Length: 222
Image (tube, rainbow, N blue to C red; front, side, top):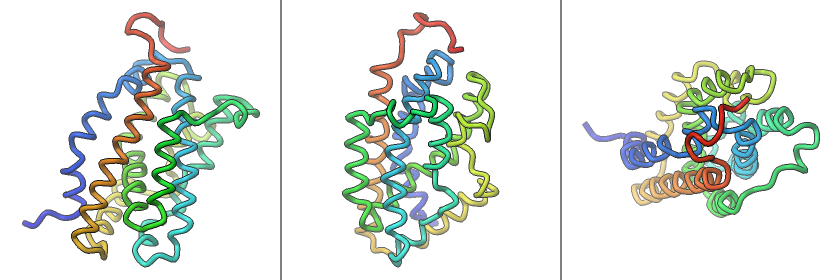
């Protein structure tokens, strides 16, 4: 059988998935070796990335290809703002800053997000990850840090407006498989997806460098 476009993307990024799962920051987070503020730093970096991505999404509503990947029910900025308020307090906007890797990531989204292929590549990388592995992260955060969905802290990972996550992901991949672009553009999208993974890993790598203590040097987060 001919490999579908969504399968091509998954195959091309399999190694990227494995590297992301082995990331030091995420491992430390899931093991409870970081403080709530250490977790909050990742939430803050997500916030800046999603501001850019969702601004690009609103510009895609009139694009014949890009509009098929505009899903307001996925928008994460309101949930991120609730989480940041819980993590940093009412003055959270004054307490967060984008890291250098996040600034690079945001600049890339702004650069390519004006064309459908670039937008779709970054949209796929972020949201499909949130709908898949992100759900396991949410469960770990609830257990380790005591967050309750709906009360802030992990609302970023809650997609109540989407309904069935498996059904939504199936529909998303169906749209990818039916995308009306030529093979050259598909190859560009795959390359951009791989770059998006790399940029995300660089953001996490900076968090690892700054925040992760040596194994055994810190007690579990409280």
